[in-house]
Length: 328
Image 1: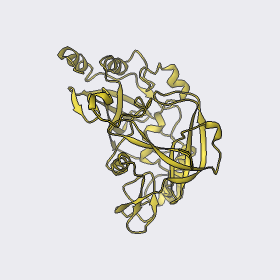
Image 2: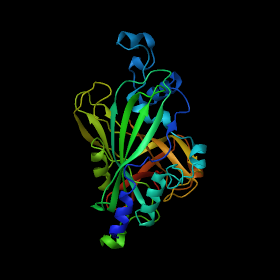
Image 3: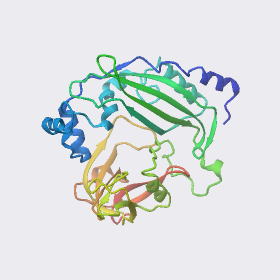
């Protein structure tokens, strides 16, 4: 796969353009959404839910957690459908970003993985803030050779403003659009498992790269705090209980039971077989792991014993999924 100079020039023409029209948040920053978010994340900081505690900490009132920034502007499912979903992202088909992605797709760069997410906050979000977001295509790289295959890095800069036009935050987001390697091209005898090469790749960060490295070796590991010994998953930069930043790996048996599950019919993503059963498993070690289920979705039940098996997407990613315990 080679990008011609003409194609590279065409890609560079998008740099500096608005990715699409500005987006308005459908709802103002509000307490119910904040409460749902912090409860799901296990964040017990009272400044997010208690006005008196927030004022005691120097705020005017309750503030929103910084990681919620993009959630206020997220498109709902119906809106994503009506936007055209030019490449599965909900991007309207007639925007510069959609045209750029379509050009990359036409060039064979069909794989996508997020690589960077850098955020700058100018102030905390407060209850009642009505946000808008504008996005600029900041950069399109020349063709690069990566472990996933040849591709182009696309960087967008999202600017978040309040109702008065004040910039409250900026988010620089980078993806890699790449031409997926074929097993035959690599000469690798352990070819990707049938039908899964089109699946989207995970977002690998410094905090979780150890987990994916272990998964490539078909080892399931759990992050454990050096100070208090508590296990945690997904991986994070510090222990949520004692705030210690030091940790080590603990090997997991891969055995557990179904805590909860959902059977998905729509929307459908490439690389998966539908109906698709996705389960939340209680691992023997005491943490939970979310993964798809191999086998008849109709068999899944709460409390069902399961065990991990491995699915190879490519030479970079091997991921766990579950099957009924004792089955081969």
